[in-house]
Length: 490
Image (cartoon, rainbow, N blue to C red; front, side, top):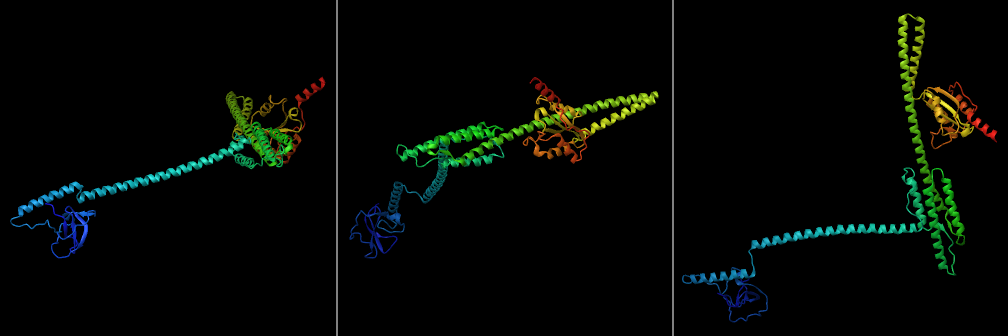
């Protein structure tokens, strides 16, 4: 049963009455005029445009209204039916408005909060990822900008003929850093327009602007030509032609000065000096490589010589041991026959063989022992040059003959060839004495010196080296005969 519209006591505030529009409570209230049940007939209903706040029953279960009836003995059934109808109406109202119980509402709220937290976390993760991506993009942009600047710089250097090319000294552990400094200075001079100089007040067709343009173009062309020549000199320089390459580059600079006389065009002295240093670094590295190759050849030759000496000593010992065995067998036979004289002679041979074997063993064990030689070749090197060396060969003249092979036109003259227990020390002493007269100061294994045999003999005497025989004159038999035949023909 529906409650009619009217003013009814408010369940929350007993001092006021609230308007019931027949469906639900409104926000319209007024003070109670007379205590007790409100007079619904004398009241004027408020405007229906005001906002409503629910039903009397749903607002407060303790609120009393005109629909409430007391249950008596005779109306209990009717009240029960009316209450059932009211319950059904309220259920329909709950179903119509989609109302849920508090547990369901709490669950939905928790799900909503969880979803909000998840969305917030995802948003924060996306923002962090976006920040990282933005930072990466900024880094890539910075790299790209640097590359653009580098490309522009390289383009400017290449316009001036300064290209990145392979320099011999780049692979040098000693010279690479120095080369990098020189190259950096060269690039700085090109960038600052200091590599080439020219007049600044030249006019062309009575135009100072055209004159400046002409000077700039000619400067660029001539600098490009000079740099190309400098690069070619670096690429073609050898270990022994540095002066030729430097003269070639200096000549190119002089030609530019002659051709640019009208505008005072010239490669600056400082820039030319840097390019010459760059050229010398290439030559120095090539010289070091050549010296290393020569030293390697000398080391290999020394190893071959050492193996040859070891083989000779082993063969000599084997031969002496066979002879000793033969002498000992013969001695035993002579003693068995009672030949005293023959046995005495054979004992001498046995002793000689044993001494020879001991000498070979000493030579094999003591690598410093050997023969020191002083030789010359007048026909090939002149009278003021000798070679001072040592050999451990059992036959030292074999080494001298090898040195006079097809690589020289004449055989060597031997001024001294003597055995020394410390042949290595004697050789080193002579090399130190004549270090300033050494012919090849780069490769010290080349044992030639600008001295004569008499100077070597004096050095040996000063250091008290025992020498049995030393010749200071030059025989040069092949050379003298060859020169005599040539003079006879002339």
